[in-house]
Amino acid sequence: MGGDADGHRHESVVQPDTSRPAVADGAQQVEVLEVARPVVEPLVGDPLVSDDLAADARSAPAPLADSHLAGREERLDLPGLADGSAAFDLVFSVFYDKIIRADFIDSCRRILNLHNGPLPRYRGVSPVNWALKNGEGAHGTTIHEITPGIDDGPIVSQVTYSIYPDLDEVEDAYARSLEYGYTLFAQTMPLLDRIVVRPQDDSRATYYSSAENELLGERRHFTRRQSAGGG
View 1: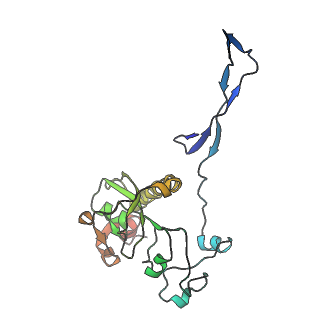
View 2 (view 1 turned 60 degrees about the horizontal axis):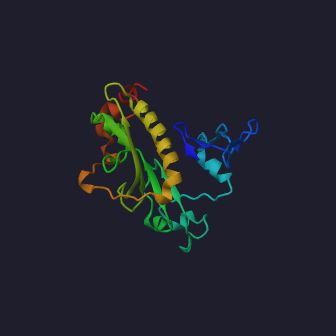
View 3 (view 1 turned 90 degrees about the vertical axis):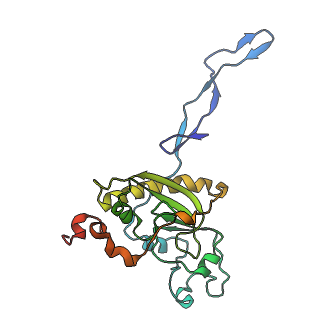
């Protein structure tokens, strides 16, 4: 089996061609075979679009809990959190803007984050906004392991793509990041247990906090017009 650029799995089945006679070649019998047309199946389904992901999760069989709440007593709805015996095989955070508690991280065998920046650069908040503000010609999306620090865990996978500060509004580059982020996720997950993570180079790290958002100027919101107060 193999894959193509469209994200489909091809399974080629070799079958004998019964419309042709077997060919005698001396003492050997040679049977003529033909390769059947590939069976094409989706490798990864289209993402589900929902206006309320939490509501969808509550309707699913798996329990739902908030990992970032300040007090442990506020999040006892997930079995094992109260006594510290909880153990999760895999937790995946996507563009999450809260710092996850260390005790929750410790309860996870693997906990990953999809960060909207090319780590170790653009750690913190509003990475797309800052990349456009800084006149970058390329940006990126990173899947990394979550640690108690901020976006500083080992890198699992990463993709870079072009952005156009002279042309792009923030919403344009952000939409592009969602497309590349989904592709990165879809291609990484089947290989997750085999990927060797790599530590980030802290000497190349940059970081932006929410306290600096006002410095973004015309890149503060999704469009220049919105940033200028034009709605």
